[in-house]
Each structure stands twice: as C-alpha cells, then as structure tokens.
Amino acid sequence: MTTPPSKAGTKGVPRAARERQVLDVATEEFGRRGYEATTVAAVATRVGVTKPLLHHYFGSKQDLYLACLNPVGDRLLHAVRTAMTGPASAAQPTAVTGTASAAQPTALRVLHALFTALDGRREAWFVLYDTTLPPDSDAARRAAYYRRAIDDLAATGTADLLRTTGSSDPLDADALAYAWRGLCTALVRWWVSHPDESPEAMAQRCARLFTAGRTLLTEASE
Image (cartoon, rainbow, N blue to C red; front, side, top):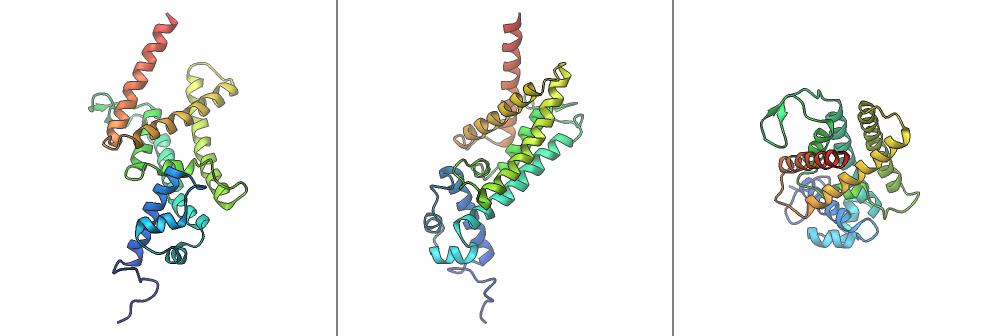
C-alpha cells in the first residue's frame, strides 16, 4: 500500500521524524553560523536529504528559520514568564548546596529555567539573538517580537530589584536590563563550549558566581 504523501519520508524514515531531524540540524546551523552564513544545502547535506526535498518540506530558507525560531521563542518566553511569576518561596534545591531552600532569587530561577529550556539545543539561544537577519524581513520581525517580550519581562524584574535598593532611576533599570541580556548570552555561549554541564550544574555555578560578586562588591565598598 502506498504511503500517503503527507506521511511519506525518505529512506524509510517517516516524514515527521525527518522533519524533526531537519529542525534539529537547522537550529544548530542557524545558531552557530547565523542566518546569513547558513545555507539550505548545508542543512540538507547534514541531514542526508536533497535540497529540493528540504524546500518541499519547509519552503524557503526564511521559512526554515521561522520553523526553528517559533518553538524556541515560545519555549524561552514561557520559561522566563513561569520563573518570574512562580512563587519565590517554593522549596527548590539551592544552586550552592543542592538542598532545599525556602527562597531562590528570581534571577537564579530565571537562569535555571533558561538552561532547562535550552538543554539539548543550546545553540537555539543564538537563533533568537541573531544579528545577521535581513532587515525588515519576516524573520527579523518575528525574532524582534520574541526578544521584546523577553526584554519586557527582564525590565520588570530589574526594575523591581532596583526598587528594593531604593533606586527608581529608569536609566539604572534600563542599564541593568541591558547588562542582564548580555550576561545571559555570555553564560549560554560558555555553556555551549562545555557540553558536559547540565542545567542544574549551570544554575549552581551561577549561584556561586553571584555570591562571589556580592563578596567583591562588599569588599570594594568597605
């Protein structure tokens, strides 16, 4: 019996499975090389299919990028929103001791959520924060939508944090949100080059770094 075209794959691989393979490889390629340097031909070669077949499955290069971006953006946005709105008093393993804590700082909850959302596809962060997207393209606009949504959440969090220190300067909040985005990107970039680090290990490492930073700042103010 002939397999319906919507389910047909290549070399005995069901279409759905082959599409997942394509998206996994394409996400890695876009994340590592950027949109401009990534080619549909390179993705097809890595997957082991023809370029025309890949176009048949996903359309243009921009369509393929969007197919990679949308699940990444949705997953990261959901992870950040959930981490920020979740109860801060929920007992969770602390990033330093691994034992239950009465309260985990929001920043660490967000980082842990990001690492968990990116686990197994770490380059996906750079699909979202790609500086080579064609200006005024659907790809650039969609990526900007997700970045703005995540940045808005970060701005809310940093403004709340500054208010606890008595600062209400909007430029302080803007600078801190900008620094936070850069910190997340730097940490993910480091994580990509250390594949044996689990999300939990990364969260623990961040907690130790935050503690060291607070110690340095305290010593500097004395």
